[in-house]
Amino acid sequence: MFQTKERFLMSWQFEATSTQKLLNQLTDDSLNQEITPNHWTLGRVAWHIVTAIRVISSQTNLRFEGPSEDFPVPTSSTYISESYKQSSQAFTEAIQTQWSDHNLQDMIEFFGQKMPVGTLLLFLLQHQTHHRGQLTVLMRQAGIDVSGVYGPSKDEWAVLGMEAPKM
Image 1 (cartoon, rainbow, N blue to C red):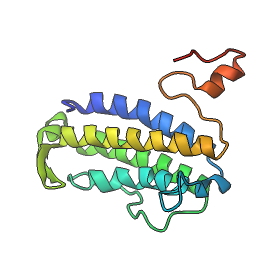
Image 2 (image 1 turned 120 degrees about the horizontal axis):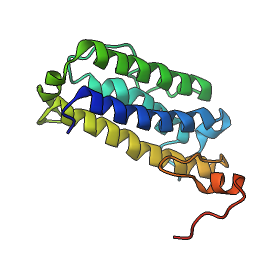
Image 3 (image 1 turned 180 degrees about the vertical axis):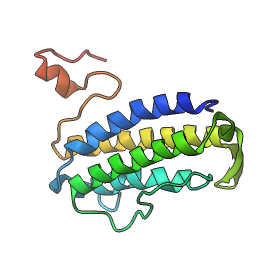
Image 4 (image 1 turned 30 degrees about the vertical axis):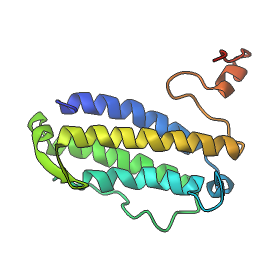
Protein backbone atom coordinates (compact mmCIF):
# COMPACT_ATOMS: atom_id res chain seq x y z
CA MET A 1 0.00 0.00 0.00
CA PHE A 2 1.22 3.48 -0.82
CA GLN A 3 1.29 5.96 2.05
CA THR A 4 2.26 9.07 0.07
CA LYS A 5 1.39 10.27 -3.39
CA GLU A 6 5.07 11.09 -4.00
CA ARG A 7 6.06 7.44 -3.46
CA PHE A 8 3.30 6.25 -5.76
CA LEU A 9 4.14 8.78 -8.47
CA MET A 10 7.81 7.74 -8.39
CA SER A 11 6.81 4.10 -8.86
CA TRP A 12 4.23 4.96 -11.51
CA GLN A 13 6.74 7.02 -13.49
CA PHE A 14 9.22 4.14 -13.61
CA GLU A 15 6.60 1.55 -14.57
CA ALA A 16 4.80 3.81 -17.02
CA THR A 17 8.07 4.60 -18.81
CA SER A 18 8.71 0.86 -19.27
CA THR A 19 5.17 0.28 -20.48
CA GLN A 20 5.38 3.20 -22.88
CA LYS A 21 8.63 1.85 -24.39
CA LEU A 22 6.92 -1.45 -25.15
CA LEU A 23 3.78 0.15 -26.56
CA ASN A 24 5.92 2.37 -28.80
CA GLN A 25 7.43 -0.77 -30.37
CA LEU A 26 4.11 -2.22 -31.52
CA THR A 27 3.12 -2.27 -35.18
CA ASP A 28 -0.35 -2.29 -36.65
CA ASP A 29 0.23 -5.80 -38.01
CA SER A 30 1.39 -7.09 -34.61
CA LEU A 31 -1.89 -6.16 -32.92
CA ASN A 32 -3.55 -9.33 -34.23
CA GLN A 33 -0.98 -11.68 -32.66
CA GLU A 34 -2.64 -14.32 -30.45
CA ILE A 35 -0.95 -16.70 -28.06
CA THR A 36 -3.55 -19.30 -29.11
CA PRO A 37 -6.87 -19.00 -30.94
CA ASN A 38 -9.71 -17.48 -28.93
CA HIS A 39 -7.40 -15.72 -26.47
CA TRP A 40 -6.66 -12.03 -26.23
CA THR A 41 -4.63 -10.54 -29.03
CA LEU A 42 -1.60 -8.32 -28.54
CA GLY A 43 -3.79 -5.34 -29.43
CA ARG A 44 -6.43 -6.35 -26.90
CA VAL A 45 -3.86 -6.69 -24.10
CA ALA A 46 -2.25 -3.36 -25.03
CA TRP A 47 -5.60 -1.54 -25.16
CA HIS A 48 -6.63 -3.10 -21.84
CA ILE A 49 -3.47 -1.66 -20.26
CA VAL A 50 -4.50 1.77 -21.58
CA THR A 51 -8.13 1.65 -20.45
CA ALA A 52 -7.36 0.12 -17.04
CA ILE A 53 -5.80 3.37 -15.83
CA ARG A 54 -9.14 5.13 -15.91
CA VAL A 55 -11.33 2.10 -15.17
CA ILE A 56 -9.49 1.13 -11.99
CA SER A 57 -8.96 4.68 -10.71
CA SER A 58 -12.63 5.52 -11.36
CA GLN A 59 -13.38 3.76 -8.07
CA THR A 60 -11.96 6.86 -6.36
CA ASN A 61 -12.89 10.54 -6.50
CA LEU A 62 -10.03 11.20 -8.96
CA ARG A 63 -11.23 12.81 -12.20
CA PHE A 64 -9.32 12.96 -15.49
CA GLU A 65 -9.81 12.25 -19.18
CA GLY A 66 -8.80 8.91 -20.60
CA PRO A 67 -10.31 6.03 -22.54
CA SER A 68 -12.29 3.59 -20.44
CA GLU A 69 -13.95 1.32 -23.00
CA ASP A 70 -12.08 -1.92 -23.73
CA PHE A 71 -14.05 -2.44 -26.96
CA PRO A 72 -13.57 -1.96 -29.77
CA VAL A 73 -9.83 -2.48 -29.80
CA PRO A 74 -8.14 0.16 -31.99
CA THR A 75 -6.36 -1.04 -35.12
CA SER A 76 -3.64 1.60 -34.88
CA SER A 77 -0.61 0.85 -32.71
CA THR A 78 0.26 4.55 -32.72
CA TYR A 79 -3.19 5.39 -31.39
CA ILE A 80 -2.81 2.85 -28.58
CA SER A 81 0.64 4.15 -27.66
CA GLU A 82 -0.44 7.81 -27.74
CA SER A 83 -3.59 7.04 -25.75
CA TYR A 84 -1.48 5.42 -23.03
CA LYS A 85 0.82 8.44 -22.92
CA GLN A 86 -2.09 10.88 -22.64
CA SER A 87 -4.00 8.82 -20.08
CA SER A 88 -0.91 8.25 -17.91
CA GLN A 89 -0.08 11.97 -17.97
CA ALA A 90 -3.66 12.99 -17.16
CA PHE A 91 -3.73 10.42 -14.33
CA THR A 92 -0.52 11.68 -12.72
CA GLU A 93 -1.55 15.34 -13.12
CA ALA A 94 -4.88 14.55 -11.46
CA ILE A 95 -3.14 12.90 -8.51
CA GLN A 96 -0.78 15.87 -8.16
CA THR A 97 -3.56 18.48 -8.26
CA GLN A 98 -6.57 16.71 -6.72
CA TRP A 99 -5.11 14.64 -3.88
CA SER A 100 -3.06 15.02 -0.76
CA ASP A 101 -1.37 12.12 1.02
CA HIS A 102 -4.46 11.84 3.18
CA ASN A 103 -6.56 10.69 0.18
CA LEU A 104 -4.51 7.50 0.00
CA GLN A 105 -6.10 6.48 3.32
CA ASP A 106 -9.66 6.98 2.02
CA MET A 107 -11.61 3.72 1.99
CA ILE A 108 -13.21 2.61 -1.27
CA GLU A 109 -14.91 -0.53 -2.49
CA PHE A 110 -13.32 -2.43 -5.38
CA PHE A 111 -14.55 -5.80 -6.64
CA GLY A 112 -16.60 -6.18 -3.47
CA GLN A 113 -13.66 -5.49 -1.14
CA LYS A 114 -13.11 -2.44 1.02
CA MET A 115 -9.59 -1.06 0.79
CA PRO A 116 -7.63 2.17 1.13
CA VAL A 117 -6.94 4.12 -2.07
CA GLY A 118 -3.22 3.47 -1.49
CA THR A 119 -3.92 -0.26 -1.88
CA LEU A 120 -5.93 0.34 -5.05
CA LEU A 121 -2.94 2.22 -6.50
CA LEU A 122 -0.71 -0.75 -5.75
CA PHE A 123 -3.25 -3.00 -7.46
CA LEU A 124 -3.19 -0.72 -10.53
CA LEU A 125 0.61 -0.96 -10.75
CA GLN A 126 0.58 -4.73 -10.33
CA HIS A 127 -2.24 -5.09 -12.86
CA GLN A 128 -0.23 -3.14 -15.42
CA THR A 129 2.89 -5.21 -14.73
CA HIS A 130 0.93 -8.46 -15.11
CA HIS A 131 -0.41 -7.45 -18.52
CA ARG A 132 2.93 -6.00 -19.59
CA GLY A 133 4.39 -9.50 -19.14
CA GLN A 134 1.70 -10.88 -21.44
CA LEU A 135 2.50 -8.11 -23.90
CA THR A 136 6.18 -9.07 -24.08
CA VAL A 137 5.37 -12.73 -24.82
CA LEU A 138 3.01 -11.76 -27.62
CA MET A 139 5.55 -9.24 -28.96
CA ARG A 140 8.17 -11.99 -29.21
CA GLN A 141 5.69 -14.22 -31.02
CA ALA A 142 4.99 -11.35 -33.43
CA GLY A 143 8.70 -10.98 -34.14
CA ILE A 144 9.11 -7.66 -32.34
CA ASP A 145 12.29 -7.05 -30.34
CA VAL A 146 11.45 -6.49 -26.69
CA SER A 147 13.04 -3.71 -24.66
CA GLY A 148 14.24 -4.45 -21.16
CA VAL A 149 12.10 -3.54 -18.19
CA TYR A 150 14.08 -4.49 -15.07
CA GLY A 151 17.36 -4.90 -16.90
CA PRO A 152 18.49 -5.54 -20.46
CA SER A 153 16.41 -7.90 -22.57
CA LYS A 154 17.96 -10.67 -24.63
CA ASP A 155 17.58 -8.41 -27.66
CA GLU A 156 19.44 -5.57 -25.96
CA TRP A 157 22.27 -7.88 -24.89
CA ALA A 158 22.65 -8.87 -28.55
CA VAL A 159 22.85 -5.21 -29.64
CA LEU A 160 25.65 -4.77 -27.12
CA GLY A 161 27.45 -7.71 -28.72
CA MET A 162 27.09 -9.79 -25.59
CA GLU A 163 25.35 -13.00 -24.74
CA ALA A 164 22.54 -12.78 -22.21
CA PRO A 165 23.34 -14.49 -18.91
CA LYS A 166 22.24 -18.12 -18.73
CA MET A 167 19.55 -18.86 -16.21
